[in-house]
Length: 460
Image (cartoon, rainbow, N blue to C red):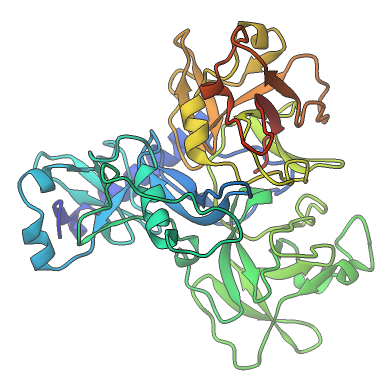
């Protein structure tokens, strides 16, 4: 195994203690988000350790919405992470300068193992992060965060026949990983072994990896007595089971880890998670819905791992917009985007799948002095650490600013809590004396597009 020897059993106690310490640090730092939609669940852990990010990879078309491909892992700056998965022959082919370009992703001294995350001993006494049993590395040849992922997607799609122009091409100076090395994808479905027709899936509206049924419907856990499940709800007392349907198990179903079976009063069997019976919610119409979150005090999303979020952030429902990110006192968080020529879609509830690299290039500089008279950067503490979809950007004034999925976050001054007043508000660039250059503000299109910057309510 490249990178060092996997830690021995002699270090398990040390790791357990470290895990407890890091949990306390995370709680103190506000890593467990205040989420008005989800409520408390059981057995929750963070999806990624501090300093490790998740990035949605998209395939950017000429004029259509960027297509989501998969989610990759990154370091605290969003740079792609790699693993060696090749043969001894591949290992021998990447030595010297090639091997030196792959740098171990060093873990903090108090890091601890959990779920898919473990540690590897390095020769210098430090520890290296490992994901699903393989050590993690950065690659010096990636000069822009995420560029290698873009190259991989382009390679896969360069010959695709599309209804519009396929602009995907890889210049020779944009490399692919050498043989035996792979870019690491984040795979939440592997964090927990589940029985048939139950899986783990990321549900964006509650910002975490949750249990879902065979149709992709969000699963909830009931923290009361299963015999009282028809009368324990505040909104439909005595008719709870009209809204909450038990996730039934077959007579031959076998327990799988924390997912077990329990008996119901009518003789049927029901799945339970950490001892709590499981249900689906009737108003969840499609995969990804989580409309039952926060509806009742005794029903909560069956969360396996929660995504990192700052302590002063929550997810809230806004009429006409759906789920949006907001400050803990209810002020909507916004991202600012360079204009890109796209066919429709920007006014839809969730807008486009925005390209991560574009947000990174704009950084914390997408709002100048005149802009800041109306907009307030959403600042991060001086000791903030990137994790999950949240990154820390450094501003010109030395302060730190939170970014979500690559885009710096702001609130609108004077906007009331629970209101989204600036979605798709544009600043157009029409001449040389404007405050932003064409390069900063977007792309001029031969089909009549212009250049500008626009605001979008941040969605989970």
